Image (spheres, rainbow, N blue to C red):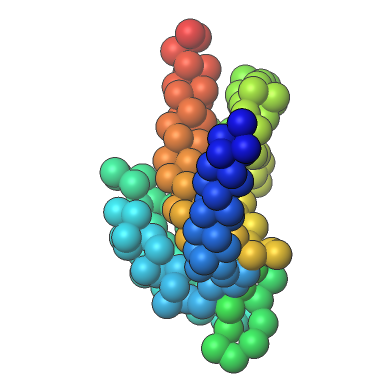
Length: 166
């Protein structure tokens, strides 16, 4: 019994030491965001927000273009603690009640991602946050980044189902 307990204790300590040894980040620079997107297969071209100086990335998944706005930034070089991913889609018509249903249904059914409407521009969109505050591992960031693809896919399916009446 004692040897079984020691085995579990050693395994637990090994797991703990491995997780403690993992690289922890609590902010990312524009270059790090660009590399993160590129490594994930999203491409990624960084520009700097003229008003805030924060990095802004343009990414793609398939034919879809999206933006990553870095937020809660500081320091030199600028590093940011939150990443806001978003994609907007032209409706090519005025916003209607069905669009509000799509947004509400998506938001009720999905924990990750948030759908919205931009009435003045006749657009519908979805966004997604990755928060690095307090520190996260690179594996966590990669996992959250891969979730962005499924958020977009789920959102576009919801929009498509509304158009087809499914």
